[in-house]
Image (cartoon, rainbow, N blue to C red; front, side, top):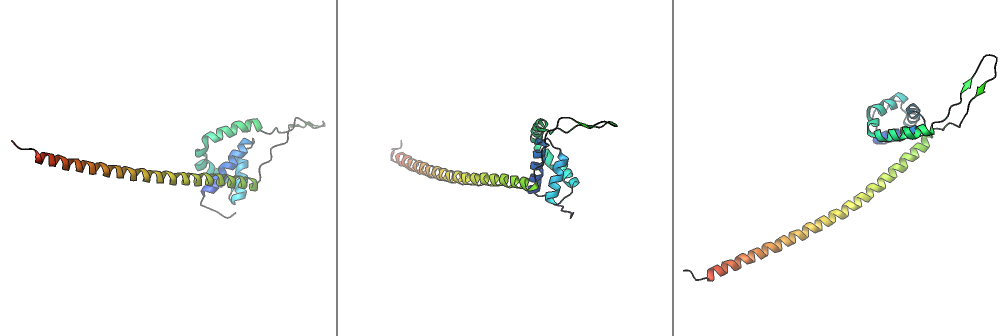
Length: 169
């Protein structure tokens, strides 16, 4: 595999989503690293190192939740018992959870990014409206202040006129 040094935020996001999804499905982080490594053309070790050194710290609560869900969803593994010269007995078996394909995970990441982008655009529009209101309020406040200053100046002029008209002594 070619070495790809720089991790992007999209790579980190894909790693996080994949690990959390695998944990929720009762799978291990190692299985998630394998899926991500394939999709990002990195080694499983590089994915594991990035997860443990950087990304994992940002997802503490989600990891706990995913593991709790995963314990409930953990696939039952067939127990096989073989004794010499005896038949093989197999315990209860459930269909193991199949890991999501890279394409499905990638689609999930893209959908998440689209939702984030949509929310971001909504916030930009809201921000613009609030900025316009603030400018309007500031303009109104400035006009009110100028009006008060004019009144104060007018009152001061009137006071001066009154003081000049008063006979002294």
